[in-house]
Length: 152
Image (cartoon, rainbow, N blue to C red; front, side):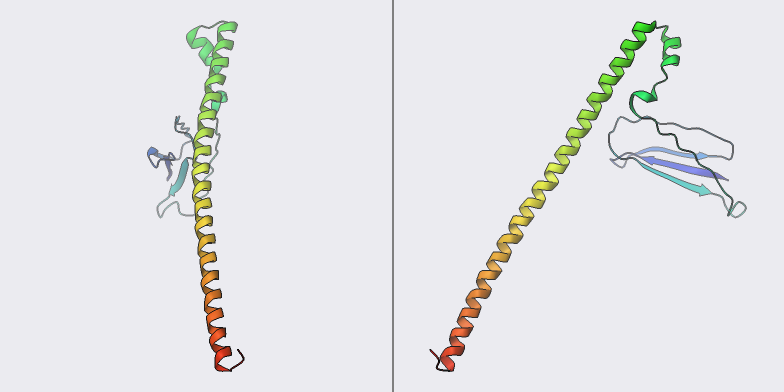
C-alpha cells in the first residue's frame, strides 16, 4: 500500500511522479516556475488495504525560509557577516522573483480586463442596434395599424 504523488507546474509539465510506500518518507521539490502548482495524491491500496487510513502531512516552505542557513554556514564555512550577506542576497532574489511573478499576473489580468471591456462594448452596440430596429419596427407597425383604422 502506498501513495502516488503527482506534481505539475502551471504550464502542465510533470515535476514529480513518485510512489511513496508505507514507511514514513519525505520528498521535496524545487521549482522556478511561478504560479499555482497541481498536487495530486492517490492511494494505491489495492483490495487488501481498501479502507485503511493514511495520514499525510504537508509542510510547504517557500522563498527565503526554504534555505537552511546553518547547513549553508557549515558547508561553505561562512562567518556571520558572510552568512548575513547571503541571506540578504536571497531576500533580494526572492523579492525580484515576486516582482516578476506580479508583473506576469498583472499582464494576464490586464489582458482579461481588456477582453472583457471589448465584449461589453460589442454587447452594448448590439443592444443599441436591437433597440433601434425594434423602435423602427414598432413605429412602422403602429403607423400601419392607425392608417388601417383611419385614425391618421
